[in-house]
Image (tube, rainbow, N blue to C red; front, side, top):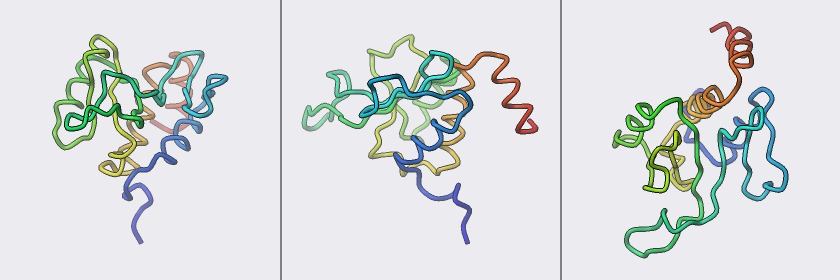
Length: 140
């Protein structure tokens, strides 16, 4: 039997993984398009359709964009330039330490890959004390 981490990632996994991170909360009033935060800082959120993220052939705004924070601009660049990943960015996010991914493309990642990215997003936004405690509790 295959490890659950090897299966394609889903939107339900985004919610499950983000909500399970220590001290994670959903910003009040965003339940339909959750904004997951730690210590008042967003680390994963679901965007409303915006003019900067559109289907190139139809011009329709993407209605399924998820934003994940990253540690650095270098990590962002590596993720969006790697053609093996579904991550992308738009000019609106220039200088913003985050990557975008469409919910409809999450299945191109395994659940384990998605979990690692969400955990990294949490690490990039949580306090040093929370990160240290979480890593210690995990034995890493």
